[in-house]
Image 1 (tube, helix red, strand yellow):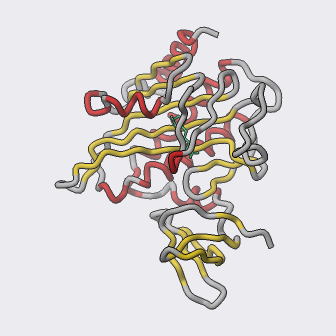
Image 2 (cartoon, rainbow, N blue to C red):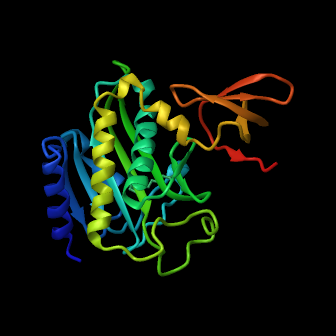
Length: 265
Ligand code: BTN
């Protein structure tokens, strides 16, 4: 399928929703990494520029991991954002995007997805989407210069099996192969819901949906606190997406970042 068809379809739909004035979408067949490309000259780009790729040769995830991005089975895209935002608040872009992706997948596929802290979307307890926000900060002003929000979604089963590090941990949305229009609809739905949330991001109202969709509340997790491994139960997620964790001896830990794992019990 020609990428021009994707581009036309997506931009026409966005125009219909009056989102063409914010978003400008370009589609490429194969790129290294949509985040890397958008980051190269993000300062010169307009807010709302989106690069969609049908495959990535060097897709990147958090913590310098690779994001498996083969052709024909997923979409990988990055959005340039230039919000008037304190640098310390930039994680809210990721949480807002997690809500948008999860809701969009539910709407388009008719399934129920959940969110793992803070950037992964799950279906049937396996990951179907990852989000990577990379920001540039004006350290004097303490403000964000720009952010590149990258989203990868596994739509169909890949032809080849997943790499060893994600086999058994990753899955896809549709069991039957879907056409390019459904894939475009998914991108449009993510962009539409993300725009609705982003335009009033400081109100944090989307955090209620985030909490509803999080599968961590009430679960036991393993996490790092003060450089030590701990186990505790997540009792709450605050408006900054920090985890409020109760330890077995009754202490409260506020977990802001790092890797967490569910403890089976
Ligand atoms: C993660 O799971 O750790 C985050 C994955 C983010 C992947 C997306 S795909 C589009 C964009 N380009 C990249 O290289 N990464 C992000």
